[in-house]
Amino acid sequence: MSIVVRLLAAVCFLLVSSGASQALDEKCYLVWNPAAFAGAVNRYVDLGEAATIKELSKAIARRAKLHARNPPKCEPPLSTSTDLSAFCIVLWQPMKSRWPRIQGIGGLIELPLGRFKAEDFPDYPLVKSGNTYFQFRSSIFSSGAPPETDDEYFPRCREHAAFRSQHIIVPTRAEALADVVQLRQSPEWTRLWANKPRYVPSEAIQYKLIEEEAKVTR
Image (cartoon, rainbow, N blue to C red):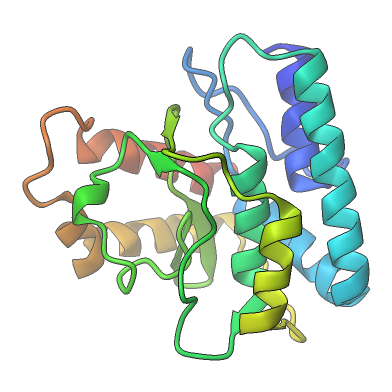
């Protein structure tokens, strides 16, 4: 893995020592670390809303600038917009039952989104099972319009949701491994993969990618 991709992953998690990114295969997948993500969320809870918005905005801008100067040979699975959405989904809790809509991040081509139901996966592009936040994985994104920026999305968060006041649980590796099995057995997961289109890779491939996230949890 190139030094550029490693730096991109480090900025994504905003944790210098998280160890959150590792090479998975030739497609330049980066492994999401649920424990590192939960630790970052809790740090932002302690910082408060205003300081969190300021820090996330700066980190995303730094990453975008780095990407522009030294584009990797292939895109990592997290764009700046999905980074932002992952944190926002957990840090801001909707005042109603769920978010009116997700951030405009584009489509994850390697998922059967035609059968995707927002009520089944309210934390998309994350998926929560037990106390663990996993990330849906794709090496290709598609969007009919440019992704929303932080300037567009942060005001929406503040309008429709309240900033989290309580920490989330940081899962252990054992807990994450149990939670990923629970995810695969859930009716929501079964519905997502029922009669998938031929162009979408198998459920087993997506599950293996998410299972890898559980294995690297520290």
